[in-house]
Image (cartoon, rainbow, N blue to C red; front, side, top):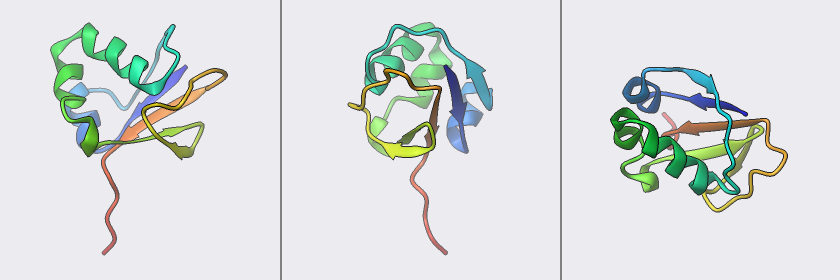
Length: 81
């Protein structure tokens, strides 16, 4: 699946996107797999409450199933202004 990172998440990981082979059943499982990879992922996902997630461009949550997902995006909450 294609995993996209935006704003400070991208800065901490050092990539805007990557193709990930995963056996994760939920977004949270995917994050656990990523965090186990390297410290930069651990830094990016240290506070999951400070992140939002979208599956196939639909806002979702970390308990959402990934079955059939083609794209997962992680980003900080958006603010108006």
